[in-house]
Amino acid sequence: MDAALNGKVVTALGPIEPDAMGGVMMHEHLHSDWAQRAEAPFDMAKWPMLERYAVPNLRKLRNYGCFTYIDNTRPPERAEPWVYQKVSRLAGIHIVVATGFYREIELGKYWARTPEDQIWPFARQQPVEALEEFCVCEIEEGIHGTDLRAGVLKLGSSSADLTETEQKTFRAAARAHKRTGVYISTHCNAKGAHVSQLRLLESEGVDPQRVVLGHTQGQMVSEWDTVRECMKRGATFLMTNLRMDVAEKVRQGWADAIKRAFDEGFGHRVTLGLDCAFAVGYADMEDPNWRPHQGDSNLLIPCVIPLPPFVYLFVYTLPRFREMGVTQDMIKTMLVDNPKRVVPVRL
Image 1 (cartoon, rainbow, N blue to C red):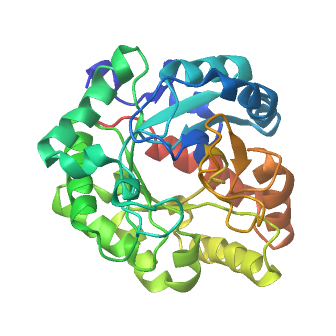
Image 2: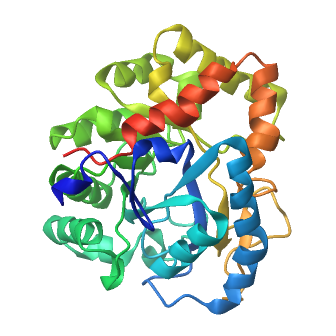
Image 3: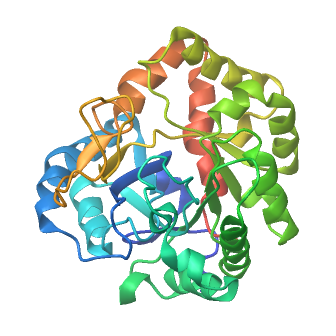
């Protein structure tokens, strides 16, 4: 990695200083096409949805002091580099784009109807060395020969124990991280996954302070003892999918988990995101009218989180959290201070 990037945040439009990020949403998706098995040219029929709904709402984030979001869509589901660059310019928002690998989904769950659907075939077929080089190339040279460099390494696992393929992708990304200084962000929603993921990354020499364990609001509520131990070692926990149309008990549990982390001195280890997604081939499992793989390759729908996209965090989630005792200082720490520590390149 170019030494000049040390301490900088690598965005779709180039490096910026950490102070320029403002508030940061740590886990979002501008474009996720779950039907893609190889990165394909962007289907321009999808652009009107992004232009009509994504861009205006991303622009509104600035009204809340949020100037950056981390796009955790890794290949092959992500869009072409120009899409992120154009949206960034139109919305006036910094976008950090990911490289890396997703989890191996159980057959029959979500969109995984065949073994090929479970994980990107490239990740399953290639040795760890090839996966490492792939990530390093996207970080140091650019994605698909462009000047857009990836600024985050995305990984994921589906259960408490990593599959053989997931172990391989974690090792590859860990080695790429050590060569480039780009931080690691994971999909980690299964019970106990935070323990196994962090253990494997540490075995490869990764400093836990460079790891963000994502979708971990459940663990923060129900597995606090092991979460605390991971935080003590330096890991950051990312709360996502914070929709307010769930049961009051669930909402209060999230707010109480935040307050407990701060009360025990671990507020500097918590960040926030929505997991808002514009997607093809993904079902919001609570919507009975939506099914994966409907055959319309042009369909790009905001899903997972209720509308409005992206600003939902500021319009609904954070006001409700404040009512439940999460202070503005806590929110600033999670949205501004903690990302400023984690996201920049550290060589």
